[in-house]
Amino acid sequence: MTVDPVIAALALPNDSRVDQRVPKKLLLEQGAPTPADKRAIQDGIEEIFWVAALKPVNVGVPVFRDDVREYLEIAVLTVTLRQDAKANRLAELVHRAIPYPLLLVTAQAEGYMLSVAHKRWSQGETGKVVIEDLHGTLELHADAPNAEEKAFMGSLAVAGLPRGDLYALYQGWVDRVAALEAARITGVFALPGALGQGGEIREGLEEHKTIERELVLLRARATKEKQMNRRVELNLKVKELEKRLLGVTSRLSVA
View 1 (tube, rainbow, N blue to C red):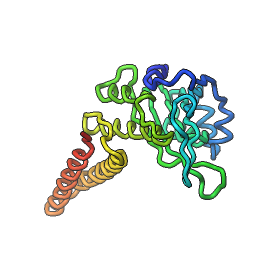
View 2 (cartoon, helix red, strand yellow):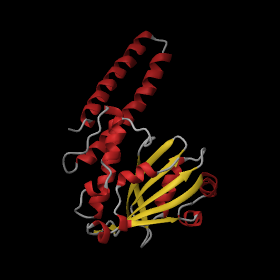
View 3 (spheres, rainbow, N blue to C red):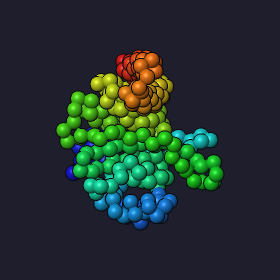
View 4 (cartoon, helix red, strand yellow):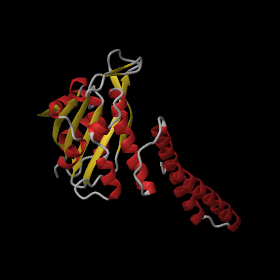
């Protein structure tokens, strides 16, 4: 499976292209904290490819610096995984190994995943960066996308991202990944319409996941409950949670 459809959707500036293979050795040295992770890299990764480096000189967007982080460039990498590889863990290891904010496209037999993670200075080790929350798409069918995936792919072009600075540009991709996850729930892909709304979407997604987990447990308890009055009580709680879930879903439908 080729990553070409996803890379084409990014519409990267020609002079940002690097197009070089990255040796696994780099990942083993920088991003593999345990023997199990090192085995996962050796056994699970077919190829790592550095596609592009987005810098002020090739995207016309200034660097970003504050007390928390410094964004001098944004890396775009692809990773081809073998069939039984653990995609989520390997994506996290790649993000850890690269010192710059990274847009990572992983390809596996089942489909693609696009992941992003903001980075900040480590509070414990001077000069080292650590990743914040890792955000990844669910399985992405870039070769035969559904309506939500088509809209998502159509929103990824660099030229259409925020251009205040490299942090804002990268946040544009973070918001688009969250918008696709919301679209899996609502059936409609919609980008945040106001400053800060991307954060509200991510909070809503976390709340949605929490409620769904609680519903699974409550429904299981209600099914197993022998006492009728207790079962009625549990079913009422299920109804309350279902109502909350509908409310969260409504908030995720960004206009």
